Image (tube, rainbow, N blue to C red; front, side, top):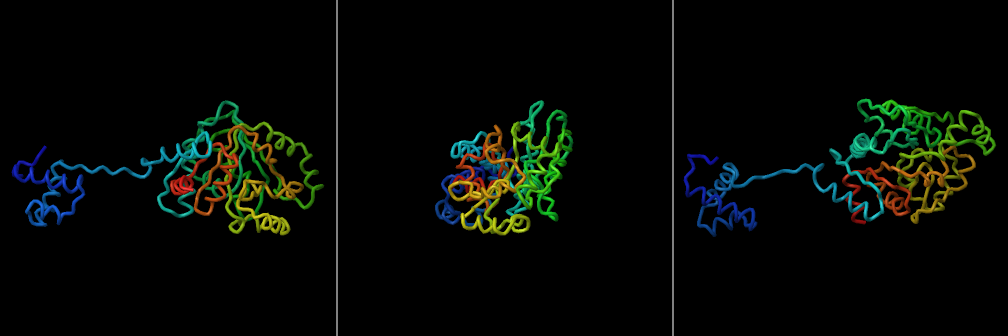
Length: 319
C-alpha cells in the first residue's frame, strides 16, 4: 500500500529514478543530470521507491546460494555419486570443519540401511564432525567399526575407538573396537596381534563394509600425526616419493599413485585395495591446504561421495 502523504508526481519520479538506477545501472549523479533534479532529490526518491514497494530487495544467504550448482558441477567433473557443500560462518579451519560436520549430521543417515556396516577413519575433520553430532537416532542393527588402529597418544583426533563411540552413541548402533596402535615395531608383532580373536574379527569386517567415512590429508609438511607417530625412514620415503596427501596414512603422489607400500608390513589398517572395494566411500575434507590432495584423490576415483565447504568446492570447480 502506498503512503497517502506521498505526491503522485513523486511516485512517478521515484519509479523513473529506480528504473534508471537499478535496471540501467546509472549513477545518482547521472540520473540527476538526466532528469534535471538535484542529487539529494534523487537520493530521496530512491529511498521512497524502496519504502513504498516500487523496489524490493531480496537477500539470499550463502547457504541458499549456488550450492546445488556447485555440487552438480563437482559430480560431473569427478564422476561422483553425491556432493554436499556446507557454508562456514568464517574462513577459519575450525569453521570449515564444523560446516562439514553439520553436513555429516544432516546427510549421513540417508546412507544407512537396516544392517549397514560402517568403517570410520581418523583425523581432525572426522573428529570435529563426530563431536558436532547432536540428538540421538535409532539404528540398532547398524555396526560402526574402526578402519585403522590408534595413533598419537595426546591427539584425540587419531584415537579411532573414541570416534567410533561418538558416532555409535549418536546412531544408537552396535560398535566394534580395534584395541591396538596403528604402527607396530615389527611385522611379527603386527601378525601376532592381528591373530588374536578380538582383533581378527574386527579385521574380518573390513572385507564386508558397506560404507566408509574418511578424510584426505594435505601435504606431509602439515601432517602432525606423521611426524609424531611414524618411523623417520618412512617419512623420508614419502618425501622422496613427493607425497602430496593421504587417505588413512596411505600417501599418494600427484598422479594418485600410492607410494608408501613399505608401511603395510607394520601398519594396522584396512588394506587400500579393500577400501576401494567398499561401495560407498564418503570423504569429509576441506580447506585451502587440501585442495591439491583432494583434487588428486577425486581424480583417482578414491571417493564416491564428498562433503566439503563452499570455498573448497569453488576452488575444485575452478581447477
